[in-house]
Length: 297
Image 1 (tube, rainbow, N blue to C red):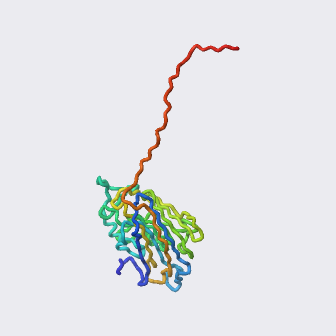
Image 2: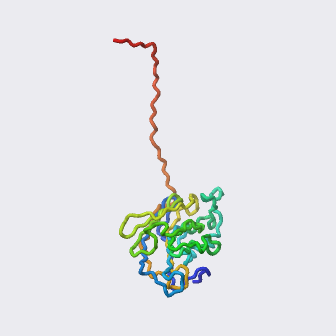
Image 3: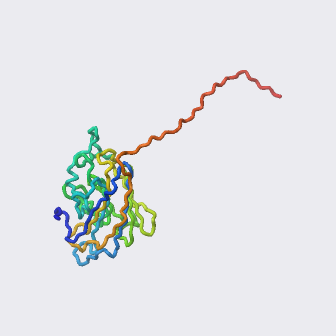
């Protein structure tokens, strides 16, 4: 297929994207999903024969996301790591309530979406050896400048493709400072409080106890929109990320046990909790006695 001019991939590039459509979740409730991956050090190509800045460089990125789309429409590989076409997402209007009032984030920004319905990627979490996912791109796609990209990084974008996190893994965790791992590593994501916060945890193969990688305050709270109960979990992958040489691809990448949890339903369940009345002691009438004297015996 023909890619936009800013996507540079060799003929033998590997990329894919999938969405778990067996379960669609209501985002009024917590959504939790996890998967295991392995990127052995021995599968990373040594590219000393290539004329590149870092002779031991390689390019691989994978991302996981929440979306209201049941298929990755117009998914762009390369540095977009399976994103839907930004021109399609950014062509929407302001999201409004039934009363016609525009919905704002906590930062006071308008929520703009396609046809006044939240349709597309709600949140995307990327692990990128190149850091290119955070760079600004086509159609006024927001991001950082090319010189501010961070290799081996964790990058988050919201529903408007705004970069809300861009940091080296080594600055986040001393034990998870690189993507390469010779054994399966489990990553878990917890989207909680109507989109206000995201917890990212992980554990290696020698333990079943999760360690926190990071917690992100997402800066918004979505309460009312048309696809409230229509949230899917997905995954995307690409190698190389932006290069014409297939030698920069990671040789092997393993993924297994993609698992999702959440509430499946159309309504928000509420329960009114009442407590027993607090008992009140009635006032007792007390008579006052005067002219009392004491006598010594």
